[in-house]
Amino acid sequence: MSTAPGSTAAVAAVDLGATSGRVMVGHVGADTLRIRQVARFPNGPVSLPDGLHWNIQGLYRAALDGLRDARNWEKDVASIGIDSWAVDYGLLRGGRSLGEPFHYRDARNEPAVDRVHARVPFADLYRRSGLQFLPFNTLYQLESEDSAVLAAADRLLLVPDLLAFWLTGREVAERTNASTTGLLDVATREWDLELVSLLGLAPSLLPELVEAGTRIGPLLGAAAQHTGLADAQVVAVGSHDTASAVVAAPMRESGGAYISCGTWGLVGVETERPVLTDAAREANFTNEGGVDGRTRFLHNVMGLWLLSESIRTWELDGDTVSLERLLAEADAVGPDVPVFDANDPVFMAPGDMPARIAQWCTERGLSAPSSRAEVARSIIESLAQAFARAVATASSLSGQPVDTIHMVGGGALNELLCQRTADHSGLTVVAGPVEATALGNVLVQGRALGAIDGTLESMRDLVRRTFAPRTFEPRA
Image (cartoon, rainbow, N blue to C red; front, top):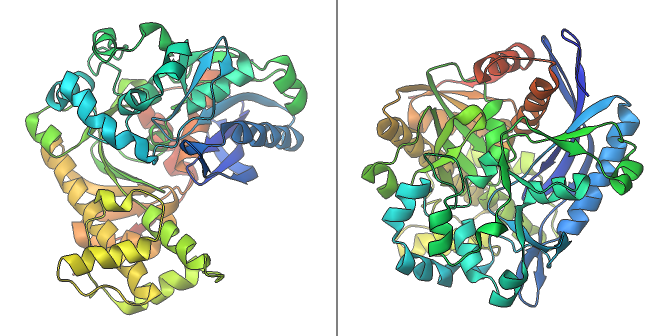
């Protein structure tokens, strides 16, 4: 289905995050961009005897129900786009799932790192893929797989591609998410089959690569019947949620950095080509694929996971924690709190985050935060400092001057975090849109349908014209 020039397209965006998923209905046209959430559902790890997994079938069912809600809200949904977090995957044989995908925070990944680097040193991996070192990157997870399961598999699909396969029956890999596996050649944007062989993997595991904007296909019978969307096409979007968020970050052609802030804080700049210097590798900056062949040159910071996991810990005691009240109390505490390294791997796994922060501080001779408000303020200050440092490093390594930071995602609602990021960086912070990931998903669908046309810059101009941001100037 295509949209007549000058008209508005209605689309559905399935946006899967590490803690929740949503289905949004979007309307997009030359002067129109709006979205509405029609379904929201929880997401989180499931502990099984062999480790931490995702309930991927439960997510698929929730997405189907959400798409049915979208059809009930808007009868003319023309297409569906799916985005999610990166690196995690499902293994298939003959189209059938070989178990629930592992969660990237599962402890199985750590021992695999040394085995991979014994075959291919990290410096060589960086030259080939441009990816920063993260112990849960897909190539390390594959080294951790049960050898019998891996031998039985004939296909690997990343999470959004797996859901698209269940909807359409077509096995493909969208490039922005494929770039997070460590198996994509950073120069050619094709699978690095030589590296795949060096790692002892079967090249046949890897599906056909497609660009964001590619029409994957219509819904299969069962999915079409359940959702009522028999006429809708599934369209590949920037299926890595950060790739979609960067599409909708209202940056102008120069001077802008972005922080896509949710569970993770993805901090960087957009470049025309990868930055593969020794300095970039030593700073652990990554070169991930962006929409339209751009490169997302960025660094991962632990993000609001630190705060949400702290709140989860406190609520285990039976309390209900109001985020709004907690942040107000943190603001009143003031900035004179301990600042910790938000990138320390000790904060990666689920668990008692306030206790870990206290231990980190104590081990370094710092006074640990003693109240919940102090813990929250310590997290905000630590994140703001890490964000500011990452922006400065991205600018220096890429050679791109930065005068504005665009905070998109859930972090854009956190006024204290936005202001302190401006203060620490000395740069203007433009906050919003909050729903940048869903908007980027909708924009790529709209362009694929012909409702809008043009470059990323023209899509960002549409965002600027339809969503009013908040601006935070640095204070002395």
